[in-house]
Length: 171
Picture 1 (cartoon, rainbow, N blue to C red):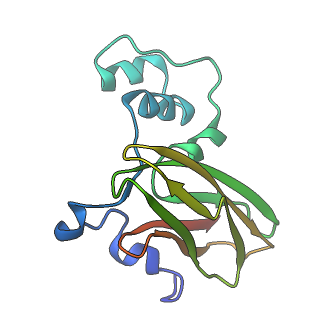
Picture 2 (spheres, one colour; picture 1 turned 30 degrees about the vertical axis):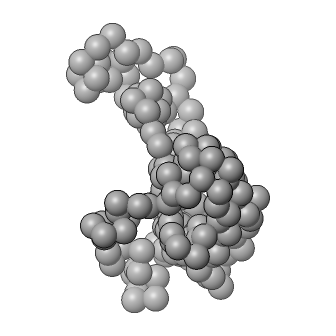
């Protein structure tokens, strides 16, 4: 990694600012079932899953690794094949924990190596705990082996700045 591409790893996702953490504006919520589904989709079998959950959770017969990217987590990461063009979409849902009537606009930290689009580009909330979903699509051309492309999605309402790192690992 060179210094222009490793910025997403320089401070990590989830870096905590205690003052701003009290009022984050938007949150990405996950349930226990979301984590169970993710573990199944990355290949855990029922036996391993039960060791983690401590209950009678089960995994289906055929994991779908492509669904792991849709875990409702702030970071958007994907591994792509070198020297092949790609297009990948991530679906996320945020919950408004800021002001009842608030509007957030998406801002993308640009990268010359990929095209990133957000639909919708604006989220307008009318109440607290209201949920809204969006899709992030990333399109890229052929990239070299062992390269990393990073960017960020930032939802802002001028008071809150909710950042989600975007990382494309070419391997």
